[in-house]
Amino acid sequence: MKKSMHLLFLVLLLTLFAGAQTATVIRNVNVRPDPSTDNNPITTLKPSAQLDLVEPDATNGYFHVTTSDGQDGWVWGRNILIKAGAISSIGVGHIGPPQLYPDPKKTPGLADTLKVSDLTKRYTKGCPSGKASCTYSQAHRNVPKSVHTQVYDEYNVPEDARNIQHGEVDHFYPLCAGGSNDIKNLWNQPSDNEWNGENFGFHEKDKLETYVCSQIKAGKMDPRDAFNRIMKDWVKFYLDVGLDSVD
Image (tube, rainbow, N blue to C red; front, side):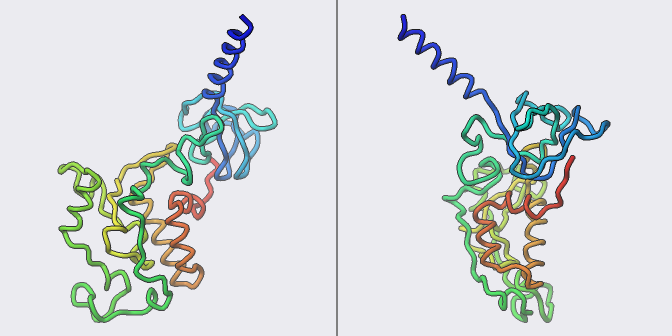
């Protein structure tokens, strides 16, 4: 009888633990009294603050939470990273779920150059539309249709989704920052890829790429650092350099 009670207690404990959900603040976020901006915030939390979820689902984009000091309120879902129990629900190494990233076996990422001099000089060969000179990316963009087809096939993209409305064959490490045209650096990135109420499709990644390449050209970012950060977690990089939004 005593052994049975111990087993029952253990099952109940594991059930409670498995169902518990926590979250980490990844960008400045207001804790509000209700799931809206109608009333003044209770407090503002900084990145790395820990939260407990009262309910697993969002309401109007807000999650019902309690803070580490016991305050009850609502926070904007885009500014928190939700975890399940003590183990991240999105796996190891990435801030976002697997569908936001290329398959590492198919697309590990590859750079042809990480030299600032290569990326900032003007080129006279390979320029499009008969231009006398052009940028690195303009001179080196060369992915034939056959390779596009190969990428679509590798990622099992349906025939009717092989178009810009649904996604694009994209360079994992951006061409303008020295990324390779090799298939090891190409993947099919959807246009719509939502997580935590925010889209992380190719349009969003294009914004990060524009930022990275402008920083490299301005001498404010080392291409090796850009490569490492994108390879490690492009979604986290995107959030880190984005404008903090508290609501």
